[in-house]
Image (cartoon, rainbow, N blue to C red; front, side, top):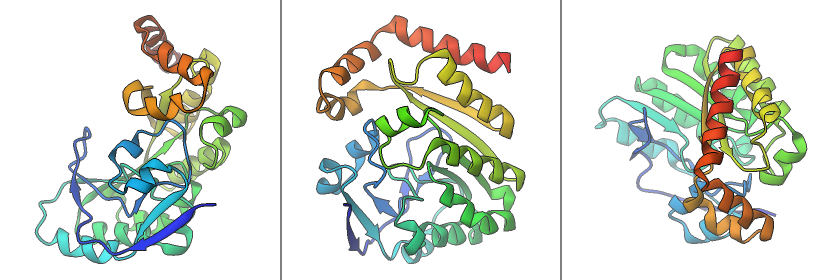
Length: 256
């Protein structure tokens, strides 16, 4: 069971060091999806949420109000929603913090790049359609195999649901992208696994981004899961494996 802790914050908008993003907005801290590989725990400021990943989520109840105030003095740029949490994890269905933040950002004329694993994002298509030039939506799909997905993303929505959400978003005229990552040795690194995700991107006209497992941020979590995962972490460091994965991704994209 996930423990939700409601807090009031003084700041929400932060500078982002990620490519193509100027700012980050995270209405929640921690994530109920409990993905075993998640790097975000290393950057989560609430210690209990970081250490008990997937079990504790902080709900920033005044997120939209704080954001609206901060935007008055912020230079316009691209805002990532979100970078260290999933903005559409289950609690968002009731809280609607992400929705309200999107409304505030659109009102201020800020570009918004949304990334999620949840089809709940389609609920807010009305906000995006009102200013489609401001929005793009990325959906993380590490694998289309539901069994593999349950292994590494135990409480995230099934990949087929994510793919359907991506199709709906693209059909509504919003720019879309697929994030294939992280790619883990022996889990989702086969040519067939990668091909199926690339096909989703092709079918929806989405840009594909991919990421190979970065061992250092995920190492503590992977080690805690036993011998198989220690072996995965060790193999992920192998330059020849990384080159092989890169070659598969590139060749599959070219094939389609």
